[in-house]
Image 1 (cartoon, rainbow, N blue to C red):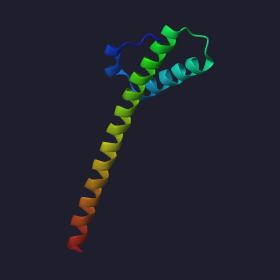
Image 2 (cartoon, helix red, strand yellow; image 1 turned 180 degrees about the horizontal axis):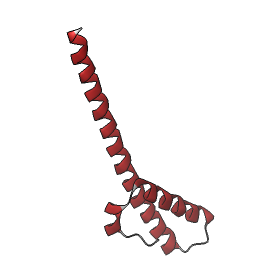
Image 3 (cartoon, rainbow, N blue to C red; image 1 turned 60 degrees about the horizontal axis):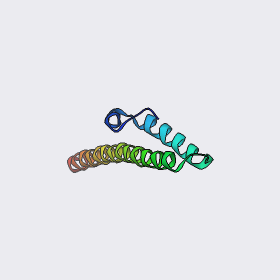
Length: 80
């Protein structure tokens, strides 16, 4: 795990997701010390937050686009 908290802002969704998958794989495999497991868990939580922010942002953009499209259709329908 080479990414730090300061790097999170620059992580893309796919990067964060892939690293999260690796963290989960390592936790499920076991064989790590308590300290390592806790560090992996904390990193996983951070990565999950990054993914959630990306997904929330994408949802907001999609909702805005759909609202704009509906508003344009409503204006166009009034003219017919």
